[in-house]
Image (cartoon, rainbow, N blue to C red; front, top):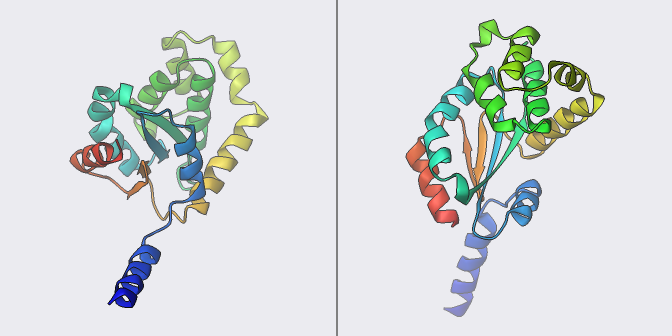
Length: 186
């Protein structure tokens, strides 16, 4: 009987999906009492846009409980996704990361352009010259390459990919399931 229980426990424990190293590293950086939300996104991806709008009220309501980490995965089939990701990173660098993220998700993909991104930066009170210089910083390519590599290393198959604690969502996800994952991770 003991052998059977041990064997069953072995199979149950080994069949559990392992938590990717990048998630464990981000969890280690997450302050006690907060829940990690690791968000892989593309500003032109319709499912990313849908998921963002669906989860925005939840993330706003629970903002003090969450540590949200954004990873940008601009897909090559979306021509404005990489410039939008660069704009988001520059907004982040200049102290308006969440505000810029919101603006970028509000812009219709067919109207995205560098001029529109610069207008968004101006609207947020960012210095246009500093913003323009930031957009061309080679460090942004390094960051985007690292974000893409992280996403690929996760074995992710689609966007958005969202981790809430160790729970993974791929594609548009119901906010009630994300809420349940936040509650479970507390």
